[in-house]
Image 1 (cartoon, rainbow, N blue to C red):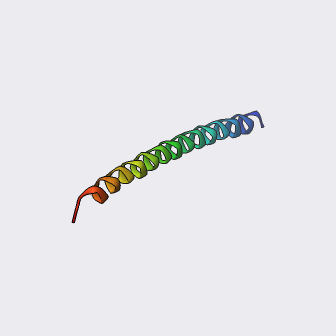
Image 2 (image 1 turned 90 degrees about the vertical axis):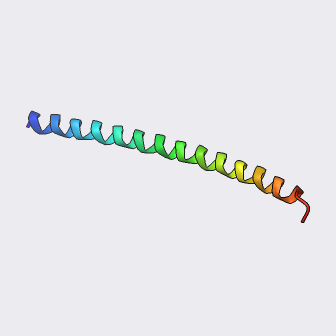
Image 3 (image 1 turned 180 degrees about the horizontal axis):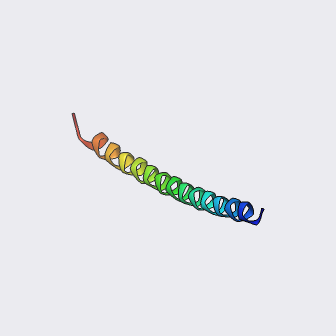
Length: 52
């Protein structure tokens, strides 16, 4: 019985670790997307200034 409880606790720990990793990756992807968007806005602004 105690072996099963230990195993469950182990699995729960592993799960919460992967959830942490996932949310961290999501935050990084978020900031990367924000940086990309602001970079594209900058490029778009420069393109608009070029006389055709």
